[in-house]
Length: 142
Image 1 (cartoon, rainbow, N blue to C red):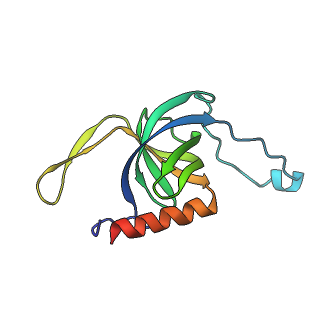
Image 2 (cartoon, rainbow, N blue to C red):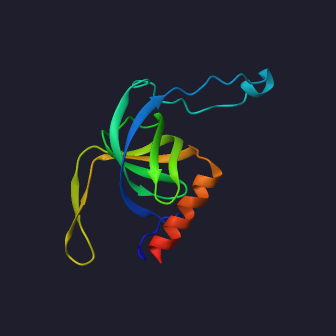
């Protein structure tokens, strides 16, 4: 994708997964920090629920999941199979969502279908998996 302005290079996939909405653990802070520290609160309305989806777009920093568009700032966990690596377990946050499928024109004039779903920023992913994603993305974008 030479005209893509995103920081992290990505690769298109279609890997099934099941997304679970999870809670953010409570963090006990020192009272001095608590007085001046402010955190974003996660959306907990779907905690414990699981949703089918597919990893459709992947970078070292995050992924697009096609499926039920979860509420913004939901904390999620999912596992997917990565080519030449195996199972990858991810913890992340929904930072954007697309409520319905839509079509947009591509540079060549054809229509590109964008499925409904949401973007996940990875919070935690094993380092060896992140390295494998980087290698895959680099190989596929060459």
